[in-house]
Length: 291
Image (cartoon, rainbow, N blue to C red):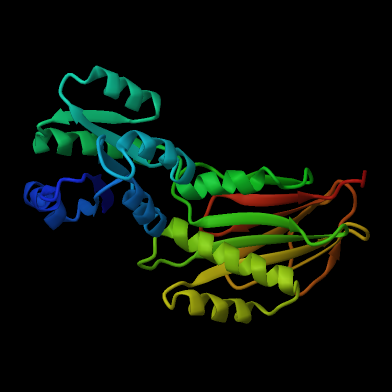
């Protein structure tokens, strides 16, 4: 179901949209939300971050559609915006396109045309990188050079992260959420925040404590997690997990699976590769000489 936000100060727009889009709403293709100006639209998007398309009028009180376009680039850069403008107002349309509008429709609005425009826009939304993919790339930009990430673009409910606990220890995280009513991007982000905070407070905390912390945030939210520890000084590596993760140790002699109950010492040039059985993404730690 695609979430669509209509932004217009006309009081009858909500009722009119429900009438015109009743087939899409009944079939589950569209879920429609409403806001009376740009500021209320931003507030709503902060509450519902997976809104895919915003359809916005230009002239509104408090915050107009052009300012809304600028703000959306900051808080929801993957959301596509369709601008509604008066017929022949080329100056406004040019300004909207320059600020990142994806498409436009003119007044008086033809709702059949608007439906087609929304559907065209949704095709581009789904072709664009997901929020989770973008978030993963952002995290990966801070990984140390000894860590290599393979994270193919596409449907993926898995997130990897690496944090430096101190000058001598790296902590690795793999987080995969289980299916629920919570959008996967949001669920993984929440689980990542809970796990990272818990590890920073106590690096050795039991993983069943994480499950309890997650249940407090939302009872439906459940995740498989993997936590690994690497000590730079002695090159020791160990891990613990609650889900279907595979850890492979590569040496000059070949590859072997690494049991979680063991603490291994890596020689220079060796690597540890962590993968989830349900995903094609994986994280690899290379044992390198210290600089």
